[in-house]
Length: 65
Image 1 (spheres, rainbow, N blue to C red):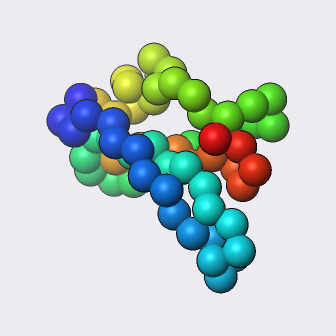
Image 2 (cartoon, rainbow, N blue to C red):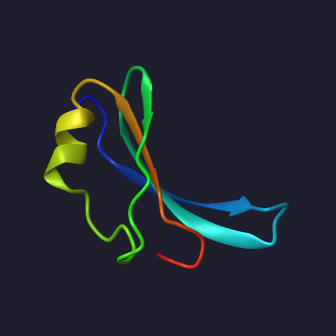
């Protein structure tokens, strides 16, 4: 992986909500949207693999994370 995953919080819906975003890697961006089973609490192995080639952006759905 060319860039270690980092965490940040962003405002969405005109600042009504904040949500957690994890990003890592470099290159063409890939957006990972998790299912409704829970927050993105880890950096799953497949995201680490993708981050070896792509810039992975993985936001938690609003209300999670």
